[in-house]
Structure formats: structure tokens, C-alpha cells
Image 1 (cartoon, one colour):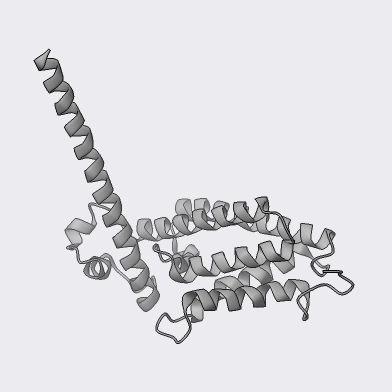
Image 2: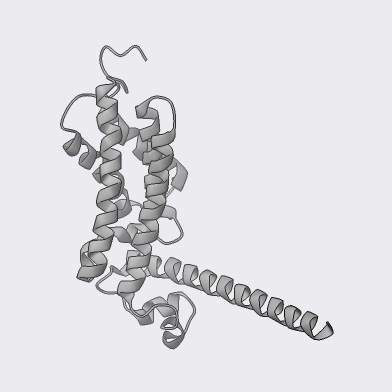
Length: 221
């Protein structure tokens, strides 16, 4: 009986050890993604290398390769993680009750926060064309699914009379373009907080869908 207990305890310690190692690895990967995002933002993707990323992450180039095989793989994980968060925000907006314009405003704020402040540095998604074909295809597929979901919300707002009528595809792309462009001009050292910038841009983007007074003419809301 003692032998069985010892074996069980040994197995339990082994499992806990593996879990700790997995957590440490996940934490390190997250720190690398954060560092890579900063490098991509400052130097541009084309001018960034694994050596610069390793330096920013306080790792040796050799250690960096234990976590990611190339900067393409790092960029892919940045973009994939960003799109996962955007898709989660979209799912919340689609399930929520209330005016479509309010749900789009919340989604827009979450989108801007994602592209300028989230851990993986989701602003890197603007470099999608830099990815190898197979990686780019996977990202574009997920990005297109997100755009399709946002377009469905915009179309629903038009049908309900909450948004000005027009071409849902064009208006959705203009809406998303305004949000994504924030990643090009935003500087974290500026005077405005990330949250405030996200709210300003969200109000502006939704205002383009509702009209200059924030609502459709003739609306009772």
C-alpha cells in the first residue's frame, strides 16, 4: 500500500511540475509578444529582427528560438490573439440587448483598445500582408469573419431605423477603417489615456453611421 501511495504522490508532483512549467512558458511567450509588438511599432515589421525582439524581451537570441521560430510566427500570434479578442467582443455585442448604435459603440471602443493597448500589441495586425501565404490566409479568414459579423450588426441597425441607410459593406469598412487607423497615429506617451482615446474614436466612428446628431432623422430615441 505504501508503494502505491508513493507512486501516486510522485505522479501528482510530476503533474504539478508540468503545470508550473506550462504556466512559466505561457508567461514568457506573452512577454515576448509584448516586446515584439513594441519593436514592430517602433521600427516597422520589415526592419525588425529576432535579435531586436530578443533584446527587448531580455532574452538571448538562442532562448527566443525556444519559444518562436521566426518573427513571422510572432506576428501571426499577435494577429491571431487580436482577432480572438475582437471576435469575443463581437459575440458580446451580438448577444446584448438595446440599441444597435450603443452596441456598436461598445464594440468600437473594445476594438480600439485592442489595437492600441492589449498585451499582444494587436496593432501589428496592420502588417497582415507581411505574413507568409499560409499564415496570411488563416488570418484573413478570421478577419473576414469578424468583418462579416460587424456588417450584420450594421445592417440590422439600418433595418431598425437606428442607422442611416446605405451600402452596409461600404459603411462597415469605413467604420472599421476609422478604428484600425488609430494604430497608425496613436502614441502612448501622448496626453490622453488609452480609454479616453478609445471612447473618442468610438463616438466618432458610430457618429458616421447614425448621422451628425448621433441619431437617424425621424428616430424617436
